[in-house]
Image (cartoon, rainbow, N blue to C red):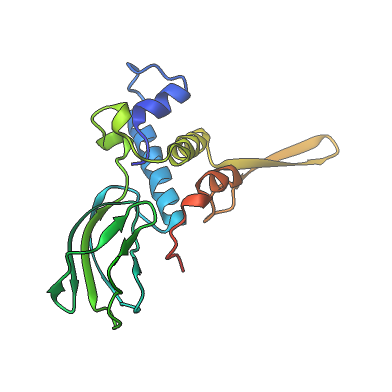
Length: 189
């Protein structure tokens, strides 16, 4: 998850000892995290990936997930490559002495990429998730908790009616989109 239950409770000014709404809040944090990752078309959690890419006779090889933290192995056509340099934030590997051999999915890379999420961190200083992503998750979880409905009213003479109307489904609120847009995966279709 992109934030913790404790941080959302603090922003909602719910005392930490009050556990009466923890289950619902936890669901809101999970839903907000999943919605943000779906919008960005990527996972932000630090994890291992094995990816097959097509070499393009260039010095750079772009991987789908970033930032790259570690590369376990790189193989071209089944042969181990040992001279690849990692460009972590760009999510690329560089062959300083040559190029990636041209071919269809001929390069196999096993690597770790992503961020240390707040729930996975040993302490606050070890979190590497960009702050705007966590802030967006907190804000969206709060929005979900407070209710995702709007009201419309209609008045005829002395009578008035108030309708509960669901907000537009399938989209994130504009203030959330503004925070997370820089982190949309470059491989998004």
